[in-house]
Image 1 (cartoon, rainbow, N blue to C red):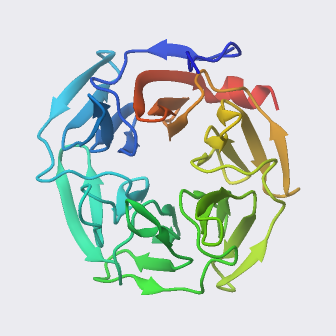
Image 2: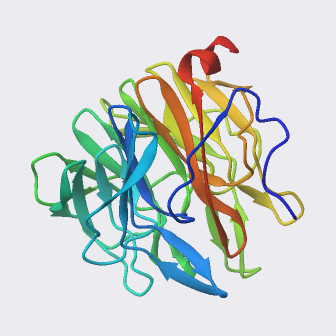
Image 3: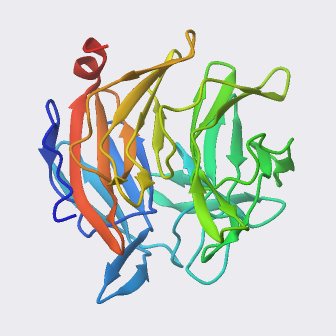
Length: 309
């Protein structure tokens, strides 16, 4: 693969690149600004674990540096201003952090066990953490464990296991009264290989139970999900398989009909990071080739994206 730029990037506006290539970072919106922290990239065939924080100033149309994290952090599960777990490249974390634009993150609580490469969704004052691995470099440590952390409490609580079984790099988004999980990957011990999945499930906050929903259109890992509103979830990017590699395909999942509709393709084939601000949907950096990260950023108006549905 010689290039990762999509030829079908209609509607996407190229924005100032991230100050450095990044994948596995935490990112969230603050109004029309965007905050980025931690993550990973590669230099001279060596993986670097990052501590830097950046803020995209929408008015100035530029990235500004913020005080760095006290230690590297990558591949944490996060949604909005909360994150859980992650890794510094050596040790897996169990901390739950609260993030704000104007200060360093604050540790709020702990998970019952360390987790990285998990997915997270925040709904009804609760952070739900799904799947993940105990060790960043050992996919055989992937679990089906799920946790719920209630804002204000000091520890997350174990939920029923994820019905698809041990899963990492799962795409998670919160909808009305439910948390949705799509795709991901597991470890196949017999073949000693990572196997992608298309399975999808929804966790009902009222009944506190998992139910299957329509599977994703194809098996993949590293797909990213973001709720556009209470009715629709945008899912995009990820890694399909060795033959097809990374993808720029995107879909909008309609919660009421339990159906996926192809949407505007991403401008890059990558495990992207998606952030929704008031007016825009952003795609930021991500893993676009093995041992490579992108610094590219684009955005598309939410109104334009939804008009095409």
